[in-house]
Length: 183
Image 1: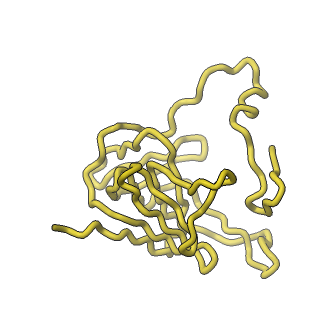
Image 2: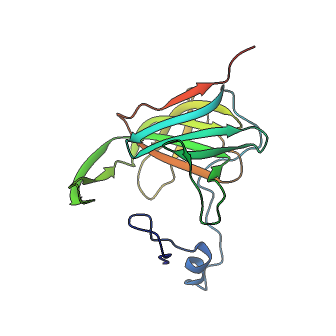
Image 3: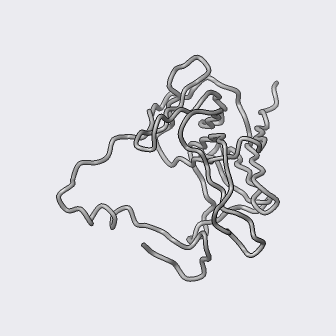
């Protein structure tokens, strides 16, 4: 684990994938893919941005960058930057709406309780890739199994190979996508 200087909880603990894998020298088998992948974009509604208003201090917006074919993240209207100065981006943004409960741990000086997300079962799903929104359902039978992303017709929603951001969003948070204006 690494704790870079200048970072504060809960954003101060990092793990290097390569270092983690090196701890088990005998295991050279890569893990199975968590999702289905395809270069073919899904059928869906063209959108230019995704708004996820988690809270007053974490109001996130993803904006489609068609020239570079990825989504760019901003918090409260300010581009979210990596340590190297580049803006956080992803080719897929997966929004899983989940049930949450609170506690038992105090999370901050205001006395807010820790948010505990229910990550098994099923719930509403939005997948954004290639500037398109595909909606459906996420399903996960147990914590030992990967999450399945399925469209309204029951077919698997395949992600674009590349960087994926999964937003676990409380069910009561209203996620909106701004459609691309028509001709």
